[in-house]
Length: 395
Picture 1 (spheres, rainbow, N blue to C red):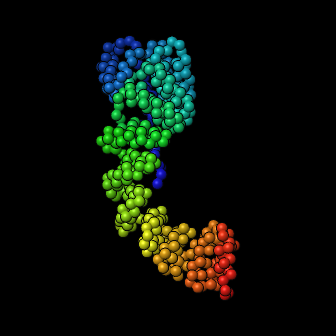
Picture 2: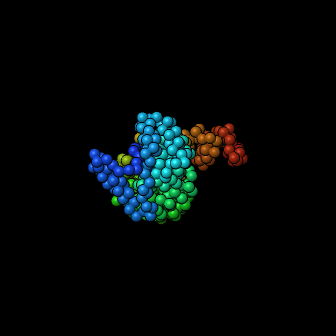
Picture 3: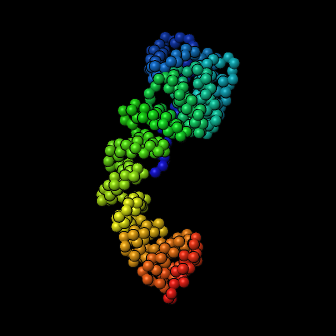
């Protein structure tokens, strides 16, 4: 069980705003439209009502507004390189104000991102934020984008600093953004902080996603906090009783926590209901049984069932496990049969040597000698052990 469920959980990058805010009053014919626009801007700012940053008042000049509109039209026409060139002109123009530069930088960031120029996207996002000219909603949206992209590019310390600034300035408890921060802390192996942040996200959400709890469980596992991992896995399984993956994860964690009886309870329930349908699932079940003294007959039953159903492949590890289970349950003849199937598949001669030993114990000396010779041919660590068998009286 790994961290395969770890995916970028933040919001997707938003496209830049389409029209610049120009200085000057609206014409009479546009009065209603202007009033509606101001209401929309106010609603957008309220996304961060507790933000310490004041909403900027800078607008675009008439001359720069034309250039910004041109940039937007080029962007909408998929002429990205030309739009980026105009954005650069604005960014390097000494007369451009904070709003104009921030507006241009967000366009350039989006263009760079779409072109797979992540270094450029990060640089432009930072320029847009540093210009400090956009409304709070846009400004902090860009900050989330920057933190997420820094994390994606494995700039974990920079990403964390950006997230910390976002939360300090906005006082936000957005669960999705908290999760992305928590993911970054996990990737930095700062497990205690990651767990705290992920729990905050889960508690702040009305409907936390299953993968959030899965990440929290993985954090606890990697931090060797098995008790907390078990508790989280139980919570996931209880919420998803029909989700086989959740049940298998819980069984695996029970096994790690030396709670084999509980693990077997889950696995056998899945088996009897016909939900075990992969080789890996059968292996989890029979290896769990194999780790408990006196459960060899269960190992045998599970392996044979899996082989009969065609779920388990007739391969080396399966036959070795079967041979050992037969041997330790005092069924030497069946153990010999399983070892005979496993030995040719082995990378060395050790399995042939084990076969020779069991054959010797059963007084099948001729067969034991033959197996010992095959062990030597394939290579073993202690050739003396095979030679002792070969030297036994008899053919």
